[in-house]
Amino acid sequence: MVFSKSEEEHVTHVSTVLSRLRANYLFSKASKCLFHVSGVEYLGYVVSSEGLKMDQAKVQQILNWPPPRNLKALQSFLGFTKFYCHFIKNYSKKISSLTSFLKKDSCFPLNEEALSQFHQLKEAFTTAPVLSHFNPSLPTIVETDASNYALGAVLSQVSDSGEHPISFDSRKRIPAELNYELHDKELLSIVWALKHWWAFLLSLSSPFEVLTNHSSLQYFMSSKVLTHHQAC
Image (cartoon, rainbow, N blue to C red; front, side, top):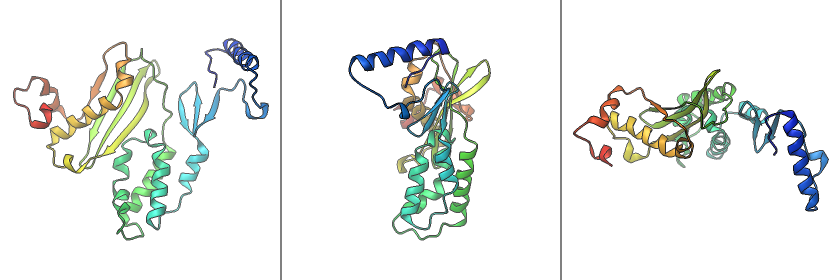
Protein backbone atom coordinates (compact mmCIF):
# COMPACT_ATOMS: atom_id res chain seq x y z
CA MET A 1 0.00 0.00 0.00
CA VAL A 2 1.42 3.38 -1.05
CA PHE A 3 0.09 6.53 0.61
CA SER A 4 0.90 10.09 -0.46
CA LYS A 5 -0.18 13.57 0.56
CA SER A 6 -0.78 14.81 -3.00
CA GLU A 7 -1.36 13.43 -6.50
CA GLU A 8 2.01 14.71 -7.72
CA GLU A 9 3.78 13.10 -4.78
CA HIS A 10 1.86 9.88 -5.36
CA VAL A 11 3.09 9.59 -8.96
CA THR A 12 6.66 9.78 -7.69
CA HIS A 13 6.04 7.28 -4.88
CA VAL A 14 4.36 4.70 -7.13
CA SER A 15 7.11 5.05 -9.73
CA THR A 16 9.75 4.48 -7.05
CA VAL A 17 8.00 1.37 -5.71
CA LEU A 18 7.54 -0.15 -9.19
CA SER A 19 11.16 0.58 -10.05
CA ARG A 20 12.34 -1.17 -6.89
CA LEU A 21 10.17 -4.19 -7.67
CA ARG A 22 11.48 -4.41 -11.23
CA ALA A 23 15.09 -4.03 -10.09
CA ASN A 24 14.61 -7.06 -7.85
CA TYR A 25 12.73 -9.09 -10.47
CA LEU A 26 9.47 -8.90 -8.54
CA PHE A 27 6.20 -8.37 -10.39
CA SER A 28 2.63 -7.44 -9.46
CA LYS A 29 -0.41 -8.65 -11.36
CA ALA A 30 -2.08 -5.58 -12.88
CA SER A 31 -5.60 -6.99 -12.45
CA LYS A 32 -5.03 -7.17 -8.70
CA CYS A 33 -3.63 -3.65 -8.33
CA LEU A 34 -5.38 -0.32 -7.81
CA PHE A 35 -3.71 2.94 -8.75
CA HIS A 36 -4.54 6.55 -7.82
CA VAL A 37 -7.57 5.76 -5.63
CA SER A 38 -8.76 7.77 -2.61
CA GLY A 39 -9.60 4.66 -0.60
CA VAL A 40 -8.82 0.96 -0.66
CA GLU A 41 -10.27 -2.18 0.92
CA TYR A 42 -7.64 -3.81 3.08
CA LEU A 43 -8.00 -6.74 5.51
CA GLY A 44 -11.70 -6.12 6.13
CA TYR A 45 -11.40 -2.33 6.33
CA VAL A 46 -11.68 0.61 3.96
CA VAL A 47 -8.62 2.83 4.42
CA SER A 48 -8.69 6.39 3.11
CA SER A 49 -7.45 9.86 3.95
CA GLU A 50 -10.61 10.30 6.04
CA GLY A 51 -9.74 7.38 8.29
CA LEU A 52 -10.78 3.78 8.81
CA LYS A 53 -14.20 2.39 7.89
CA MET A 54 -15.78 -1.03 8.09
CA ASP A 55 -16.13 -3.04 4.90
CA GLN A 56 -19.80 -2.52 4.01
CA ALA A 57 -20.07 -6.06 2.63
CA LYS A 58 -19.11 -7.36 6.09
CA VAL A 59 -21.55 -4.98 7.76
CA GLN A 60 -24.33 -6.25 5.49
CA GLN A 61 -23.52 -9.80 6.59
CA ILE A 62 -24.04 -8.73 10.20
CA LEU A 63 -27.33 -7.00 9.36
CA ASN A 64 -28.59 -10.12 7.56
CA TRP A 65 -27.60 -12.45 10.42
CA PRO A 66 -30.61 -14.34 11.84
CA PRO A 67 -31.05 -14.66 15.63
CA PRO A 68 -28.74 -17.45 16.89
CA ARG A 69 -30.64 -20.64 17.71
CA ASN A 70 -27.79 -22.56 19.32
CA LEU A 71 -24.41 -22.08 21.01
CA LYS A 72 -22.36 -22.55 17.84
CA ALA A 73 -24.41 -19.93 15.96
CA LEU A 74 -24.04 -17.44 18.82
CA GLN A 75 -20.28 -18.01 19.01
CA SER A 76 -20.03 -17.44 15.28
CA PHE A 77 -22.01 -14.18 15.45
CA LEU A 78 -20.05 -12.76 18.39
CA GLY A 79 -16.76 -13.80 16.82
CA PHE A 80 -17.70 -12.01 13.60
CA THR A 81 -18.77 -8.79 15.35
CA LYS A 82 -15.74 -8.83 17.66
CA PHE A 83 -13.52 -8.08 14.66
CA TYR A 84 -15.13 -4.62 14.42
CA CYS A 85 -15.66 -4.01 18.15
CA HIS A 86 -13.32 -0.97 18.16
CA PHE A 87 -15.94 0.84 16.02
CA ILE A 88 -18.69 0.25 18.61
CA LYS A 89 -18.92 2.26 21.84
CA ASN A 90 -19.31 0.03 24.93
CA TYR A 91 -19.33 -3.14 22.83
CA SER A 92 -18.86 -5.42 25.86
CA LYS A 93 -21.80 -3.80 27.63
CA LYS A 94 -23.94 -4.18 24.52
CA ILE A 95 -23.36 -7.97 24.44
CA SER A 96 -23.62 -8.68 28.20
CA SER A 97 -26.92 -10.56 27.91
CA LEU A 98 -25.76 -12.44 24.82
CA THR A 99 -22.57 -13.66 26.50
CA SER A 100 -24.64 -15.20 29.31
CA PHE A 101 -25.82 -17.72 26.69
CA LEU A 102 -22.26 -18.87 25.94
CA LYS A 103 -22.39 -21.43 28.74
CA LYS A 104 -22.71 -25.00 27.49
CA ASP A 105 -25.88 -25.62 29.50
CA SER A 106 -27.68 -22.51 28.17
CA CYS A 107 -31.16 -23.03 26.75
CA PHE A 108 -32.08 -21.54 23.38
CA PRO A 109 -33.79 -19.61 21.82
CA LEU A 110 -32.56 -16.31 23.25
CA ASN A 111 -34.72 -14.67 25.89
CA GLU A 112 -36.31 -11.27 25.31
CA GLU A 113 -33.43 -9.28 26.82
CA ALA A 114 -30.73 -11.09 24.83
CA LEU A 115 -32.76 -10.90 21.62
CA SER A 116 -33.17 -7.15 22.15
CA GLN A 117 -29.40 -6.79 22.55
CA PHE A 118 -28.88 -8.81 19.38
CA HIS A 119 -30.97 -6.36 17.35
CA GLN A 120 -29.49 -3.29 19.10
CA LEU A 121 -25.97 -4.48 18.32
CA LYS A 122 -26.83 -4.89 14.65
CA GLU A 123 -28.31 -1.39 14.68
CA ALA A 124 -25.07 -0.03 16.20
CA PHE A 125 -23.16 -1.25 13.16
CA THR A 126 -25.32 0.89 10.87
CA THR A 127 -24.35 4.07 12.75
CA ALA A 128 -20.69 3.28 13.49
CA PRO A 129 -18.45 6.29 12.78
CA VAL A 130 -15.36 6.59 10.63
CA LEU A 131 -12.30 6.23 12.87
CA SER A 132 -9.84 9.05 12.23
CA HIS A 133 -6.13 8.46 11.80
CA PHE A 134 -4.16 9.16 14.97
CA ASN A 135 -2.10 12.36 14.92
CA PRO A 136 0.44 12.83 17.77
CA SER A 137 0.27 16.63 17.42
CA LEU A 138 -3.48 16.97 18.04
CA PRO A 139 -5.22 17.48 21.43
CA THR A 140 -6.22 14.04 22.69
CA ILE A 141 -9.02 12.86 24.99
CA VAL A 142 -9.47 9.56 26.82
CA GLU A 143 -13.08 9.19 27.98
CA THR A 144 -13.91 6.27 30.26
CA ASP A 145 -17.05 4.65 31.59
CA ALA A 146 -17.65 1.81 34.04
CA SER A 147 -20.85 -0.20 34.38
CA ASN A 148 -21.56 -3.05 36.76
CA TYR A 149 -20.39 -5.64 34.23
CA ALA A 150 -17.99 -3.94 31.81
CA LEU A 151 -15.37 -1.25 31.27
CA GLY A 152 -15.53 1.10 28.30
CA ALA A 153 -13.35 3.84 26.84
CA VAL A 154 -13.07 6.15 23.84
CA LEU A 155 -9.85 7.58 22.44
CA SER A 156 -10.55 10.74 20.44
CA GLN A 157 -8.76 13.79 19.08
CA VAL A 158 -9.77 17.38 18.39
CA SER A 159 -9.04 18.98 15.02
CA ASP A 160 -10.30 22.12 13.27
CA SER A 161 -13.44 20.21 12.24
CA GLY A 162 -14.25 19.06 15.78
CA GLU A 163 -13.77 16.00 17.97
CA HIS A 164 -13.33 12.67 16.18
CA PRO A 165 -13.02 9.11 17.55
CA ILE A 166 -9.78 7.20 17.01
CA SER A 167 -10.88 3.96 18.67
CA PHE A 168 -13.46 2.50 21.02
CA ASP A 169 -12.65 -0.35 23.36
CA SER A 170 -14.27 -2.25 26.17
CA ARG A 171 -13.99 -5.44 28.15
CA LYS A 172 -16.05 -7.53 30.53
CA ARG A 173 -15.19 -7.30 34.22
CA ILE A 174 -13.51 -10.35 35.69
CA PRO A 175 -15.24 -11.86 38.77
CA ALA A 176 -12.75 -10.30 41.21
CA GLU A 177 -13.67 -6.81 39.93
CA LEU A 178 -17.44 -7.16 40.30
CA ASN A 179 -17.41 -6.26 44.01
CA TYR A 180 -15.28 -3.13 43.66
CA GLU A 181 -16.61 0.08 45.18
CA LEU A 182 -17.98 2.56 42.62
CA HIS A 183 -14.96 4.89 42.72
CA ASP A 184 -12.62 1.90 42.35
CA LYS A 185 -14.60 0.71 39.32
CA GLU A 186 -14.27 4.11 37.69
CA LEU A 187 -10.57 4.35 38.55
CA LEU A 188 -10.01 0.85 37.15
CA SER A 189 -11.52 1.91 33.82
CA ILE A 190 -9.06 4.83 33.61
CA VAL A 191 -6.02 2.70 34.46
CA TRP A 192 -7.10 0.02 31.98
CA ALA A 193 -7.65 2.57 29.18
CA LEU A 194 -4.27 4.24 29.74
CA LYS A 195 -2.51 0.87 29.63
CA HIS A 196 -4.46 -0.16 26.53
CA TRP A 197 -3.56 2.96 24.52
CA TRP A 198 -0.14 3.61 26.05
CA ALA A 199 1.66 3.55 22.68
CA PHE A 200 -0.57 6.34 21.32
CA LEU A 201 -0.44 8.40 24.51
CA LEU A 202 3.34 8.24 24.92
CA SER A 203 3.80 9.56 21.39
CA LEU A 204 1.83 12.77 22.05
CA SER A 205 3.59 16.10 21.88
CA SER A 206 1.40 17.59 24.64
CA PRO A 207 -0.56 16.36 27.72
CA PHE A 208 -3.86 14.57 27.10
CA GLU A 209 -7.19 14.93 28.90
CA VAL A 210 -9.04 12.19 30.81
CA LEU A 211 -12.83 12.47 31.11
CA THR A 212 -14.94 10.49 33.58
CA ASN A 213 -18.48 10.90 34.86
CA HIS A 214 -17.40 10.16 38.46
CA SER A 215 -16.55 13.61 39.89
CA SER A 216 -15.03 12.40 43.18
CA LEU A 217 -12.03 10.96 41.30
CA GLN A 218 -10.65 14.47 40.85
CA TYR A 219 -9.65 14.37 44.54
CA PHE A 220 -7.90 11.01 44.26
CA MET A 221 -4.36 12.41 43.88
CA SER A 222 -4.71 14.49 47.07
CA SER A 223 -6.40 11.79 49.17
CA LYS A 224 -4.49 10.78 52.31
CA VAL A 225 -6.30 7.45 52.66
CA LEU A 226 -6.24 4.94 49.80
CA THR A 227 -7.96 1.59 49.45
CA HIS A 228 -5.94 -1.52 48.63
CA HIS A 229 -6.97 -1.30 44.95
CA GLN A 230 -6.07 2.39 44.72
CA ALA A 231 -2.68 1.88 46.35
CA CYS A 232 -1.81 -0.87 43.88
